[in-house]
Length: 318
Image 1 (cartoon, one colour):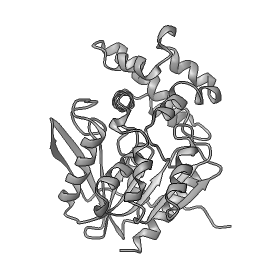
Image 2 (image 1 turned 90 degrees about the horizontal axis):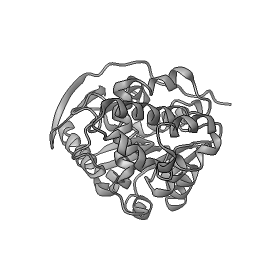
Image 3 (image 1 turned 90 degrees about the vertical axis):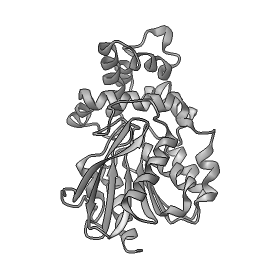
């Protein structure tokens, strides 16, 4: 039996900065690895999650020149938790702008959770700019997924955490939790906004790992993170991510020629397996890795092993 792969050692960026993408938004980016090596971009989840130092460690620094960035409104990008001019298609345009900033013709695109949604939207818009795709925790941003996670489904598996999630919402508004939370997350009352943000964020933090961990969950309650994460994620889901019904699955034909790896945990709560399975059937050329003893998080051992093996394999294809 092979030993499960872990992250590469901690590494600092060799370059960091901000890029003005218009509409009042400035994106914070960093570059990691070896200048001039195989180009890649990392797309974080959420929406609104931001990048972390561990994300840099998913790629061999000797063989990759990796760009990571905080999407509009989150992490160190400004304005913090800003919703104006913050849509899927703004982000797709931002990725293209960053590719130009990096000065490369094509690059590998890596996206997990919401990052997989964004990676698919970007690749289907600019298929000639993508050399490979690594997708984890497939999410189509569809009404069925919202209902499963925010109305009925995961509520039956985590009833204790569900009680905490619905607590800020009056019973007569609980028929549409996304809309009820939007009302509070966009409120003029900062106390109400923060209370709703923590509850929204903790629901996700407590349900994305197969075995939830206290310290991991606590990070979702930190004020700055929770406010951006909850406001932006809710904003995107309220607007159905500005995608047409089944758009990302419908348009797989545009990217079937691109080498790809799909990694998904059997017990993924936010992103039910049926999405990854549907993508696998529509895209049989892609390498599909179903991880049995795993939930949603990229750091779960089986998922991490599959991701590391994928980035290593594609490093050799330059």
